[in-house]
Amino acid sequence: MRAVSLWRKQPFSLACRCCSRTFVADSASKLQIFDRQRKRAQRDRAAWFSPAQDPLLHSVSQNLVDRLQDCKKTFPTALCLGGSLQPIVSSLSTPPVNGGVEKLIVMDASYDMVQACRNTRRASSDNAVKTEFLVADEEFLPIKESSVDLVVSCLGLHWTNDLPGAMIQSRLALKPDGLFLAAILGGETLKELRIACTLAQMEREGGISPRVSPLAQVRDAGNLLTRAGFTLPGVDVDEYIVKYESALELIEHLRAMGETNALSQMNNVIYMTGWREHSSQQKAKRRGSATVSFKDIQKQFGSQS
Image 1 (cartoon, rainbow, N blue to C red):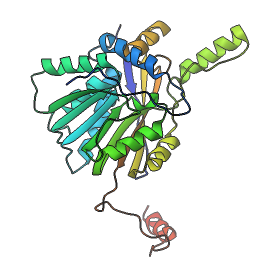
Image 2 (cartoon, rainbow, N blue to C red; image 1 turned 90 degrees about the horizontal axis):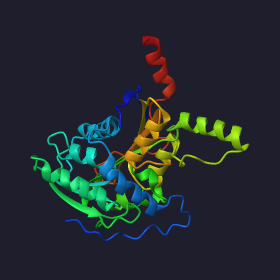
Image 3 (cartoon, rainbow, N blue to C red; image 1 turned 120 degrees about the vertical axis):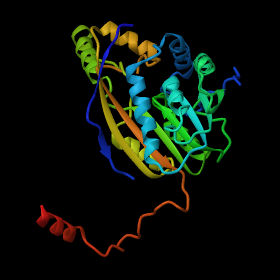
């Protein structure tokens, strides 16, 4: 695959404050939007064809792990769920910028992806973090309740049929005051490709059909965190522009990433953070208990400016 140019736009923030080949069964949710068996096969292929240094995946994983630097606490045991597996595992295995992770559980529905990640770790000279590998589906987490301090998912959860259910399971796997950290593709991803496909299909066939998988909007991310029971939810957005010489290079990149039928010129990445409830966390005051009005604050600071 030829090199591509990556541009990152200014981020937008929304304040909310041992390898087993046994697969966990697919989700039994009523609405099956995605074919999980097909997605597993795509990720098997991506495990061997994905470039060692993909600039887009590297940038997203680095920006996700950077959020750990904003936390004063450490996370001894971490669970990494699918998606951009190798870049995020590499970042979480590099102290001291990995949030104090001492044990890392790497999980993916693709055996080949897990095996490729395991081979990379074996070849690495950095063994500061104990790493375990598990083949399982994000829709059915085989993780004991209240057993990990950190759950990280980098560009993987947008392929689940039951995203709220997967996030609830992640919360239950966390210890009290544990952190959930995720990056998913947002609804503006592939905007240019969707427009091009729509115009071409309208011209040739006189109608349109969906060519891109449904993706969450920013407002959906905050609602998902709240619905899953996380406290102190936070959502922010980055936009990455990847330039290709031709449409064929774009398709080649998608296949190498295991994202077929789901990045393109402009990629909208939504970052989500949420905590499992703990008594030490700050809580909102009772409604109506404020002693200063926003109108007074506006007058004070307005006069200074």
